[in-house]
Structure formats: C-alpha cells, structure tokens
Image (cartoon, rainbow, N blue to C red; front, side, top):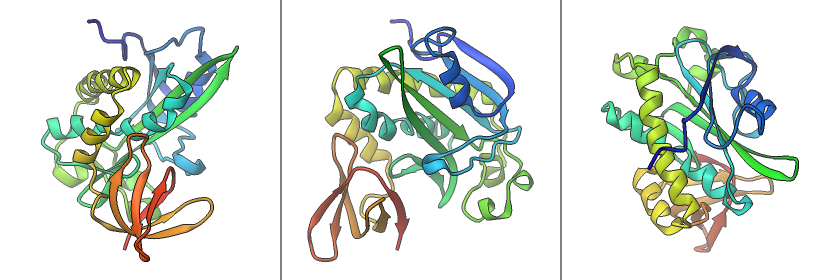
Length: 244
C-alpha cells in the first residue's frame, strides 16, 4: 500500500513556523499526508506557546492530518514515536518523556506540537516536529542549552536530514494508519516501551494543579497515570512533567 504520509513534500528555505505555513495551505496546496519542511524557522514554537529555536542544521517539519476529532490526544502522544524510532535506527537510544518530548541522556533532542484547526467545516490536525539533529549549540540561547542538546553534540554523528526525514515519515505513516483503525491499546503498549517517564518519581504541572507521585501507566487515550503521595491513581490528560 502506498504511504499516505509524505506523498507530497513542500520545501522552504525559511518560514516563521512550519505549522503556520501548513495551516495557510490547508485544503488547497496541502491535503492529508502533505509534509511542510523548512531549513529554519524564524518563530518556531512548542507546547504552551514556548519558543522553539530553529537555526539551520536541525530538522523542522509539519505533517497535515485529517483524523477523527476524538483522536487528537492520541495523536499528540504517538507523534513522538516515529522520531524515537528514527533516532534508534541511527543507534541513538532516545526515549520519550511524556507526552512527547524526545530525550537522550536527559537532554531534549526533539519536540512535538499538534494543533487542531477547522477549514470550511473540515477538521484537520497539523503535527509539527522539531529535531535537533545537527543543530549548532552555539546558535541556541544559554537557557535552552541547560536542558537541550543535539544529536551531533551528544554523539559526534552528523545525520543526513533527508534520510532521517524519509525514515521518520515511513514510521509516522504506520502509527497514523494504526490510529485510524482504532488500535489504541496496541499503540499505548508500543508507546510505553519507548517512554522513560514510567516508574519515575514525578511532579506534573497541569493548568489546574500540580500532582506529585510515581508515574505508573499511560492510558489508551494518552493520559499519564500517577499514583500520588496519598496512594490515589490520578489520570492526567495534559501537563508538563518534572522528575523529582
């Protein structure tokens, strides 16, 4: 079966944000499976509006999806899996920090931002992916370098962004098609195998509260399950994890 993801790839030297460019092209030049790629982003962003610094050398792309609206949380979760699988293909043993930060030796190498949007009564999701493959660390702000790094800085290996993108999109095609068949339990188990947050002592900051305890599970819908300090199982659909 012909892959859906990546059958059309639109390339740019520089954009403000690949997600914004994808949203501008929805339904006209960008249909389901279209990928927007840029050598750099002027105003890249991550979750909660945080800046994602995107100098030349890294991989910055957005994938246009047309899922069921109920699948958004699951897509947010599983969109990091193809990145980890691609890194492991090149012998970089990365993991996922819930929900979708890509980490290696406690340093962040990549992040995901999934945004839902309506166009003429049609629901779309744009999945933005940023990976610090060959990103020069001296091009990143000092506060970013405290927690983030690049594949080249950590391993000395310079990846081909084109080859990495090709492999990652093949893996994304597999998980996206699985999500459309409703294979949530299978995807959740596969996610768990790549997630280093499980069994960690964590503090999870949500918009409403902070939950401290031990991360024990991820639900088929993508919520992190934490056993808090009073022994209660708390399901957290969205939040920021800090290890304690």
